[in-house]
Image (cartoon, rainbow, N blue to C red; front, side, top):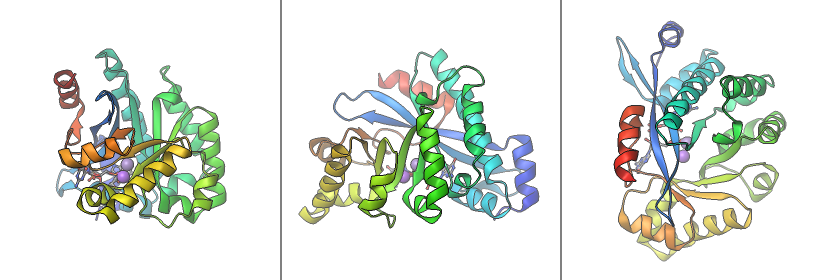
Length: 253
Ligand code: G
Ligand code: G
Ligand code: MN
Ligand code: NA
């Protein structure tokens, strides 16, 4: 666990780094986006897993600051991607706590537009469990983000407690189907039924469907056959530092 001091020092020094994992259009094979994933190396404690950093930041009241620092970095990195002729969409993860302070929406818009980028070039990912806890505020903020042009994704779809009733209310544009369904699908008809139903629901709701955690050719082929639009996972690439990601994208194309 990171202490308040560790976090404060880290944020000040910019200890946070981002790794980028490609999102691939399954039909065309084209690179369409990347998810920014937090990497944190503390000078004394070494590498800290992102979920630990996030939960420590939540506990110590740093989560808004952390998320905005991550978003700021992602916006600067997207400018580099554009300059490298890779004008792809960048996805950033939000935490539940970020959806409690209404003025976060203004901060988010400010950071993205400060140097001329557009909200539509960014996807904000929220896990289902996040969405359920503080529904009214979260919903209001998500609607404002969507009205301002952000893409919104439900992350880890299928693992939260969300019912169809919840799903119906959210102004999301993308459904990221949890890795567990992708793993199970090629192994049994039962597993395949869940993946295929999730894709069908997402598609009928007009969502971009994304199969997460694709590791094998079989998983990739099946997700594609079931009509999933996009894939993400080690099969394509692990999350990479920006320069390595750019090199990967060049050799991939
Ligand atoms: O990156 P990894 O490969 O280890 O991510 C582990 C978990 O941490 C995932 O659930 C991911 O959503 C979460 N995570 C990674 N980066 C961020 C981030 O920038 N913000 C938030 N809130 N969660 C993140
Ligand atoms: O935001 P989300 O919870 O989806 O975070 C993605 C997490 O999944 C990160 O921890 C990332 O490193 C991890 N991940 C990405 N691709 C794969 C994969 O193919 N297999 C596994 N096991 N994990 C993956
Ligand atoms: Mn995610
Ligand atoms: Na996910």
